[in-house]
Length: 168
Image 1 (tube, rainbow, N blue to C red):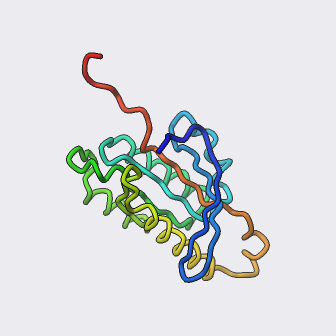
Image 2: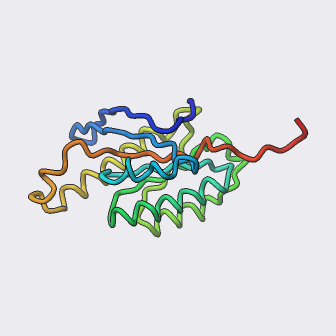
Image 3: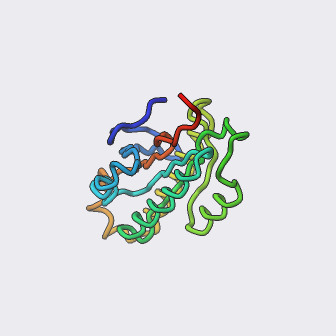
């Protein structure tokens, strides 16, 4: 899977008992694109935040993005993907800490491996279920006119440049 450069857009159709089309902005989440974030997440219905389990700084940035999202959205559904679960032996982010944090903010936390294509469908399904459930509980008259074309955003720090070690 290639790293996201700035932002990319795609649509994904998902079935959660009803067919839902997600309009997805992958904003790269990386610090150098931080100023562009609000352009993408201002009207989002949900957010998927991704961190690299082998790189603690990426989890710290997830916490920062949650703070930013909460400033604009009081109750945006959030899923946190613990990526690179295929590299468990190199884990730098405690599973217990990450799961406790996700629970404390009401987020879904799922271990994924983009390389092995594991957990990816599950994280989208769980987040979509939260998004649909939330939209059904909100006042339909106030949401009806603004519901169309709101995106799901992905802030992905999993491929952020890590400090290099060694001599080369």
